[in-house]
Amino acid sequence: MAASTHTVANQVPPLVGYDVFTADKALVAAVERHLDPGLLDEAREDLSGLGKSTGSAQVQEWGALANENPPKLRTHDRYGNRIDEVEFHPAYHRLLGKGVSAGLTAAWNRPGGHVRRAAGFVVWSQAEPGHGCPLSMTHAAVPALRTDPALAAEWEPRLTSTVYEEGLQPADRKAGVLFGMGMTEKQGGSDVRANATVATPLAEDGTYELTGHKWFCSAPMSDGFLVLAQAPGGVTCFLLPRVLPDGTRNEFRIQRLKDKLGNRSNASAEVEFDGTWVRRVGDEGRGVRTIIEMVAMTRLDCVLGAAALMRQAVAQAVHHCTYREAFGGKLVDKPLMRNVLADLALESEAATTLALRLAAAYDDGGEQERAFLRLALPAAKYWVTKRCTPLVVEALECLGGNGYVEESGMPRLLRESPLNSIWEGAGNIQALDVLRAMQREPAALGAFLQEVGKARGADHRLDGAIKDLLTELADLDGIEGRARRLVERIALVLQGSLLVRFAPPEVADAFCASRLGGDWGNAFGTLPHTLDLASLVERARPVA
Image 1 (spheres, rainbow, N blue to C red):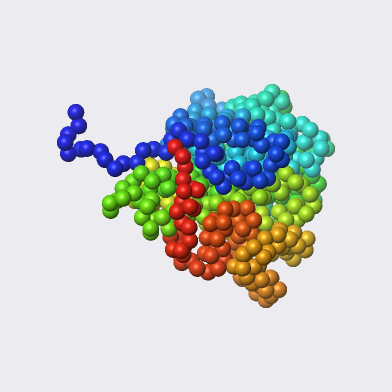
Image 2: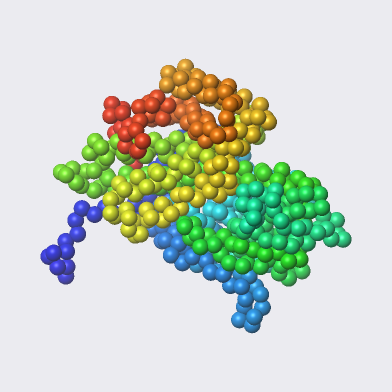
């Protein structure tokens, strides 16, 4: 019997047992906008099923367990044989298996596949983001392998399979495989052309031996990797299988696992190569060009992953404030808290809308859309991922001290929030890539301006922001030093143009007033009080 001094009151019920997809109005609208009508019924059914799984108590428990029990490195077996294996908690395998079976590595084989996969990735990442790394790289390896038709024919069916098989064995004996990637080295970091790993040609055409290392190798338990190394003709891309066709282990020595800030369920490693057998992908000396499509796809997943974190943080904050009472009423009804929640919801919707627009460009595949992606993707990667951490911090604060406690799940979101801004090129890399696109590929800027121009005349604040951006683009003096400022404006104008065209009027009005019109403070919760803030909060509310 509880003591009279320990009556529990005014505590918020857990956000569980709900459909993460259908509760996200911005995501549902984006799917309906970008998919062919003939695909919608099937897509809605699939995504709703995934959404219900994501919101279930069982899957939320899997996410917690996977993070509470991080992977362990097993360098040797009990007899002293080198095995270089990574051991994961069963919950991690369950999450990964569900992600594979949901088609999160299989966008390439079905109509509207990228939009459907992107929506699924946003939904399922909210269960636990760490296992999204191998899902992302497995999906992204396909365009790089397609530069070699023979390799693509051999590996693509395995990469796009919806069957997950854990454990190391020859790839031709598995119904589905996962891929990782190794680009950066201790001495080079983002400057991958400074890689020191050496690839020595073997007698069989297209095969080499590697000697060297990788400072960051993602998902080291994968069946194969795309890596960069110095061949006689320059930096080249290679396919490295973990297990050779005869069943023996390739030389792939895992020196240690990284002790990371977040992303605790997923393994990242330092690895050494010593006579490691690999197959060349693409031509010698064109390694960066070969692997760049894989990098681009994983950058899109960084945008999607950040949008997922933002959405889950907003959902938790709105849910908490809907039930929590303070100062004589529900927190959600307090004008200042409503302003904070509306501002967070606005940021989240802008991120989701932009992310799904990028995915739709991949489904289109036309020359105009490829040019659009060349500029819009690094700009989105820069801006959306940078907005993630301050949003999660503010959402956590909405829960007060409860949000600072591990049981709330908010600290896990916070630890994860900087990751997508760092992986696949941190902020400066993305900003410089936007400049490179404008300078070397004029069609990229033209495609971007054509996209934002579709919204011209709909909102005077957007029109003014486009005009200011054009003025800044015309001034090339010191452009590298102000690249971040320029890319920020590019991303905001693009988000504003999409919301003006597609979002409810109250959403577009709030975005243009604050992000483009200058009526905004330096922290969340500083939207103009005259806006329809209640509608923004209600639109973001998860229905449990």
